[in-house]
Length: 477
Image 1 (cartoon, rainbow, N blue to C red):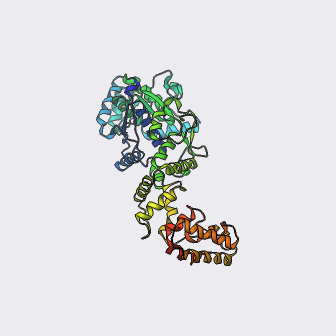
Image 2: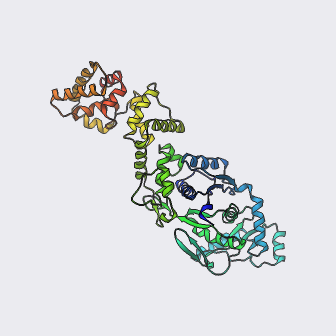
Image 3: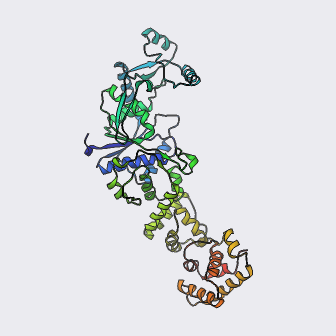
């Protein structure tokens, strides 16, 4: 099919939170469709009726929507297409590409255990392949409902992967897999082929773990007399320990990243680079640039490593590039999403409009903005212990005297400005003949409880004279 008619899809199972692997796959499909002026489809694979929920389906839609990944068609639900699958299963039986299997779960489990004991790979032994009509009738008279298995033909199966090249597997390494379970529920490998064909998918971009499934699906395409789409299997995402990414590596779902205060644009940019390179060592890119530069040819065959520090750095870069209004809006949206309430009467819109952009210059996540904002919106300060040891406890009497002198100076200021509060401090250190840091650090700790933060004198102005004087008069110990 021509590139102008590109149709791709994302087909998640609604059985839990949307994780970064699925988000990366969705993003690549989205970028590929937009680059080729194609169509991006959402299909919900909800045939696992015990685990699938509409709540999870909606979480997938909302999570990808938060990332700005929009669908041109869908969502389609497999659970609403069951009669369709039954008709194709019957077609496979009629053409002898599939057969009914009456083996019980108990027998299959015994065979698996025997193979494990004998240290060999288990493959179904085709016990039911050549049953006579009378044998089938006998099983059905006993109330045994059959599964339907695809008959794997002799010889190798080959498909051409757009990332990995030509891949071949021998028939002996492909099981006569179940297409429809004995309870009548079709399996993933069966329905995905029918849906991809009927929805006219031209390309299937998905994780490399699906390569083993692709051989089975290619055989189904052939059995049904259909042309297969083009396949591209994306590299694995590993943790920094080079093991497959999982919960043990920390936050992995979109909801967790959102709650931690990451921006959708930054996460999209980061996910795009997990397996794909735009070249020229480019890293921070707009969505428009990602769409323009994306190509399957630049997807790597090697696995990608999820570097949390790099994501956090990139998020900070995005925050610093935002205009103040957008940053404040992102922060207030984060507060609403996390149901975080600002804890005092000081948290006015006027204060936020001044504090958030100032704090954002030195923050890497929206959650860090909240943490750095606390000294300005709450008088219940928590003092940094290492800072107390370094700047107060070594010589508390001297430090207290210096802070009292500074307090006296700024209390008499005609204007409360960045310039006037700084000038007062510079005058005092000159009078005391000490380095400025011997006063700046204790003042910061006394009024914010922190050892780092926005410029000290901006902090003083933001807090206001009354609160600064009060805090300098109530020194930590």
